[in-house]
Length: 190
Figure 1 (cartoon, rainbow, N blue to C red):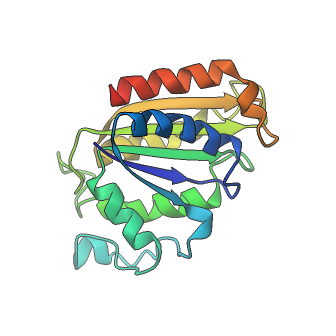
Figure 2 (tube, rainbow, N blue to C red):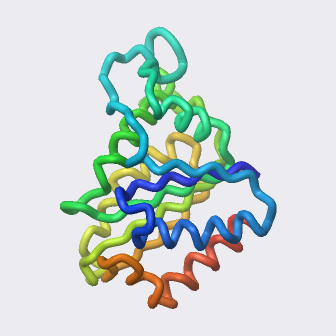
């Protein structure tokens, strides 16, 4: 199975990355082909609204460090997205990638029964951490993106939220989050 992990945090050892790494360990144990990308280490631009991906070619025409990431996602079976919440939303790093994923949609995606250029049946593990301990706060963040990710072909979606974790390493003491991550990893990787 091909697995792509997207680290949206600027902290490579942050809490969202730690959760992703717990899942990746299980994926490696099962012999999966894993590619990881730390978005903060890449140089890229957001969507340019040029519409070339709808009129000229079937991929994003912007050529930068996201080009390979977008291609890897195109061919993956499992996508892991990990992000902390900054100012009530995903990080700017991850938002830039998601905006560029617009290129996966066919020109008439709003009315087409097959709106995506990606094959359907992909799996998504979405990890969201936040300092705010309330489960109710920022519950809507993933919901904003879920519709579009489902339209892209991610039909099996797993959500892991780590609420009340802020400082580096704080998630390590949260057995509830660890256990949920392992449970999801076992479900996805078998």
